[in-house]
Image 1 (spheres, rainbow, N blue to C red):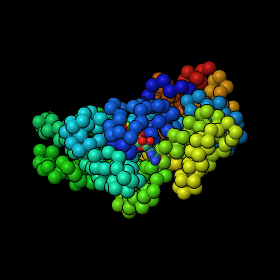
Image 2: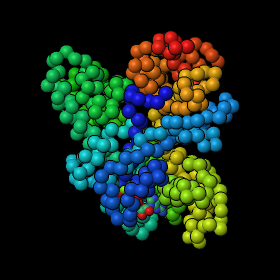
Image 3: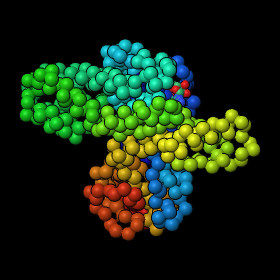
Image 4: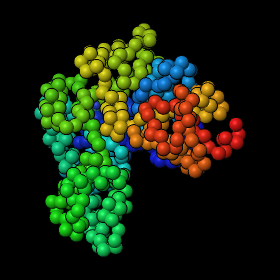
Length: 413
Ligand SMILES: Nc1nc2c(ncn2[C@@H]2O[C@H](COP(=O)(O)OP(=O)(O)OP(=O)(O)O)[C@@H](O)[C@H]2O)c(=O)[nH]1
Ligand SMILES: [Mg+2]
């Protein structure tokens, strides 16, 4: 079952000050080669690529040899594709259009979650220029970027609210009007509901909203619709651990992941060239043929081992992506199959696809993800592990292997 229509792929946006390592992280996650340099504002327009979420595949538990199609399976880990967008560095005034910032912010607003990269080594100054490591202040950098995002959200939401006020007498419920005008920011109805509740605006007419009300509401929408992981990048460098400690203290309510994007990039590239065996997110790598490595390559791999893996367990890149998708967005994985005995599609491919679905999604949702036509013609589903028949409103569990029975398929069998 190849996903032919249904909902678009989940997207993560990478934001942060210039020179913090956003593109390095993007290249590591996608193995693309977008331009990286020590100059500020190297990235001029967004880069889009495919990254992967690492999940425990069901193949070993079920004792089958799988043949993945929409994803990949390495050593029992299923890597499921998502979209990742690398954005140009944000600067003060981005929200109002400085440095084309508002255009990039509108790209960021299309994401389901954000990764906010900060330079934990403190090697960039407030303008993003390289400085003596330790002089930069990653905590201020995070606040600066966050302020730009907030101001942009306030501006966009104020515009929507102005439009809604004009039509406030049309009789349309406020939640519906807000959803209609904010859907472009990938804001979902449940975000609106919760944001109104958290800012105590459920019962207040939109015509009476003060600027303070609007700010509060915008803040809630930003938090709920763009959950964010903070990356403390460049953890290989001196000073980084002190700043990392400060960051976890300062941003207690957020996930702060220590990372070294450059190490992940080095490991993935060495793996592609066949020098090492490395599974993204792993705590170790294995050199396959030491004699083929140049002195520089040996030095680089030693550096990664000593400065990153030994100190920080893993490079943090895969961990942060997983955090976004599995923890912040609460996605589950599900494996649709056609033949429940072989756990395969009609062509005999075993466990061909793994889909990411929200934790509250039911069988009907999955059918729609596969094809809108299937949603219309479905009768029920079967749990491939137990053979049990499941109703269309059965809420899927993580790692479910499911066969959807439609009128057309029933006729065939
Ligand atoms: N030591 C160290 N350097 C890193 C790391 N990640 C990135 N860098 C370096 O930081 C510099 C900036 O990296 P980029 O990936 O271009 O940063 P960016 O945030 O995309 O920058 P802009 O596109 O200009 O906003 C480059 O010299 C990278 O090699 C890391 O984990 N450790
Ligand atoms: Mg860049």
